[in-house]
Length: 398
Ligand SMILES: Cc1ncc(COP(=O)(O)O)c(C=O)c1O
Image (cartoon, rainbow, N blue to C red; front, side):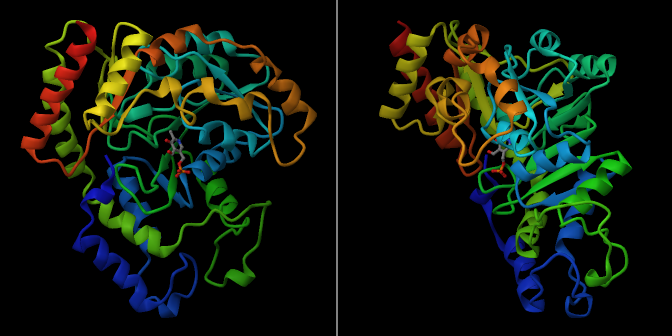
């Protein structure tokens, strides 16, 4: 998946432009810049490529999620529904605002189960945040309908699925707000970075000001700008944006390579009747950054995962036993281990996690393996890998 596998002259040239002018900051210093505005340029290209009116670059995907929520006015005591299978950033970004993450079951899409979402809605619910894990997506039509009928904000976390589409539209452009991570291990990278996407002018303005200490960005004298509301610093640097600019121009090329590699492995695994694949909602087209499949039970899945590792099939994740992406191992969240006191509202709001069980998620994640699709493999390497994977799985299942 990661774009860093194919760094080249284009990335180097963009970074050199910034170093030659010496202006590493995205705002101000107009006279010294030699016309280089890499962050602004990348925002324009993201808007064009992801078919959205506004893109605000920020320092990380985690920041993007928090800024998206803040831009929609979500904060202290508000509930945000998220899936049990995600990255820890989802609940971190919500809790950063004093809001409450409400974790609900996933289904065979490996993302939010719309029925579980409906059951979790309370008068405090303000937003639903599907997280498009491992290159594919939630059932956005069903979730959009729920949002419409309960007047909730739809925030897509598309950090792991940049380049995928749903009913012809890029993921991240469909909800009220979309979030991307552009960190080092994403399909396209800035090194570190993220983006908030939206078609809503007011949300965009909020994201723009909030991510830069509340600066209103009117005129070209930063010191004279006003601050309509409190903000923080989640700015991206020009150096990071420069790398991302070159990478975004290669997004379609990266997706094409991934699709080719993914298809070879999927075809090979399809020869095993016990292997089933993650459901992609109707009208969805993956980014092909992972191939996710199910085995018959937890025990077989653990054994296949171990056998893959012993046989050099790297980057295949059995998230059931993983500390970063699945609720089972998030003891620090369940016990609310923080460096500082949390508000009474958050402590009470999260007490539902004490003893909570997620049998449906356990079933899907227990039987799932998600294998990263690399960009740098030769066709011969992919075919060899596919053969080895089939051998490993058959050895366990027979
Ligand atoms: C689904 C998801 N959301 C958010 C993030 C956070 O992104 P970042 O590492 O840029 O803060 C990640 C990072 O892995 C992610 O996978």
